[in-house]
Length: 31
Length: 287
Image (spheres, each protein chain N blue to C red):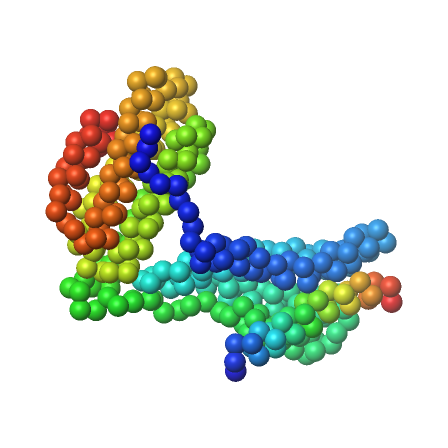
């Protein structure tokens, strides 16, 4: 895996997990 | 006036420090919604929600802090030509913490099923590993073979020198006099460049060994001694101030000179210079 691809996939995974789960925790409070 | 030159970081060093300065910022920014969720839960009087979201945010912040420490150690490891791999794998520890926190927050803070939450945790770990990488595990030995210096010997000498430099740095932090402070900064900077020049050419170790030991040890003792008398209730006398200033001058000047000699592979006069400094340090009560 090239350096750039590794960075892109890593960034995507981090954003989709840390960012998304944190955001969802706000919405969950209103359910 | 002092002959010592002002420390000017090279472009490469400056770029490195800027890049390190921002590295890990993402780990602080991404969990921010968890803080907002924590505040909302608190306002709503939801204790469990506050504990889960607030606790997760705190855990993310601690992980980011651990990861930053790992980045710093890795930066140091990359910068040096000969270095030991970091003893504690801070980056890996941070990645595991982030994975566990994500799993807990997903399962209890965002209503995911346990398997889905575990999967998200695993994805967070993978994301960290891909984006930031994990810790270096192998010692870097550079071009040390064939110089008559063993890897162990070299690493030990460099580590011992680094301990002395760090001790001088921490004593320096307790010194209020801006002039002494700057001079000591220049001294440790010079000491570090000597270590780098040894890493570049391991043959220099045998010539620099006595110099590093006597100098750094002496400089450390003198600085710590000064800090000790400065912080005691008696304070410092004018004579002590003058002595300390003189010793700093000698160390700084001779240090720069020795560095140049080391770089020009000229060992003539090296021991004589050391003897002179050793005598002066003895007189000032460093030994």
